Image (cartoon, rainbow, N blue to C red):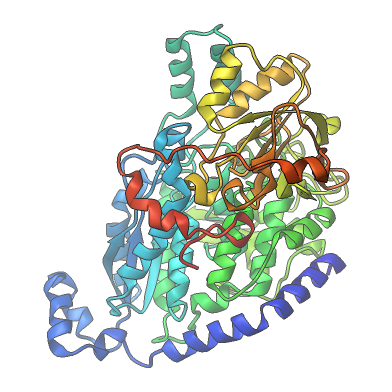
Length: 600
């Protein structure tokens, strides 16, 4: 076992001892010996029966487990559109396994692609807490012995788990929908975006390009937060082996959904393989997820999401844990934005089975974990194939089918995985270096150019005021200020400046998508401007140094001058429709390093 992985794991276990013991005691106390619905008074139970006439005989049987289906289906998120027909597939498969299933509730699912750079993006991160609350409401009827959680994208999977872990005595399996097939390459797509920003492409050309990139139901194919979620779920042992990246709307995808349904029915306390969610998400499983994320150059959003998921299970992790693991875990995968391939290229090169084989045999993963497939992580070196109409598992590949996509531990793409924690007088921030094309970009020192909104930066670019070396400082984008929107739209403008030979960086208390590469950034800056962070005192022309080699984020202004400065006043709160109702939730959000949640 790698010594750094061992050391970080021991530290997490020790740090989490009291909270983890308390959490496990609560889940153990909630375990039942008979179907939970049988504890209800007759009138209460009759209401459940009334809503599901077809389930009545099964629900009246004391030996039949009842499985909740909680879904993030809608027709707006391409990754979730296929989930619409899953409940019927699940009900049939659970019945085959001797159980019954009820659709317990839906949770909201925003599309960050649709809201990117728009007012709706301000609600994006907060929707994760809403999803967690909605999941708890669905399970609160206390008539279920297990659950299937249907979701894929950015905030949805973390929210489902944050809520599901409140009922950690129940077994749960995450059920994804899989990626869409590949359209035009992500590099081609971004080239057209940059041409449009420079006035070299028409609106019609841009739309045609985007339609070729996002062309059908399924998850977007770049390695952003949605696909990082899927990898993380499998590394946690919450997917069936190899379920993460089988394409949407294929026979194997349907077979995996049905297999998950049959499997969860076998994991309830009414059978012989009782496997509650609380035991699957353990300290070692969380470390496995961190390692998998780092080895693949995954989304920086997970430095908040995984913190929140772990916290819901009584486990305390922080950015220092990510940073220490990042220095020890090599980069084994290159897909966009870390390379030219996409998530389908990763799957074709060997996918999760090969990645897990490489990391397990190299001593970077804990094998002794509980998973929804059973005890031991080595099962996840297998991959699913279709036999007839059912998924069966066979030995996965032992060598990469494309060494340009998946490397070996002997010849990694980089000796360190690429997520850095920067610290200094500006606070702490995350910097992702695995996607930077030039190692020199890991260090930027330039005068600040300060903005209070994405629109201000866009206008400055269009006016030609950014044609110089600079560190763009975009503040009042933190959790409490405006919900911490994703700022991916800005990357196009900053990328153009870099292509013109400018030295460019970005410092913000907001966040960026896992799809953001090329531009060096210090994001999730904490404390945020609205919570007393020094970023609120930065002025135009101040020299800023962001240096991943020295893990430094520094405002090069004397303490005497800073002491005389007053922090900039925050901009007015958004007047966009519906935003006011979230004010109380937004004010309660914790800092980025604490998971940016108001409910944990």
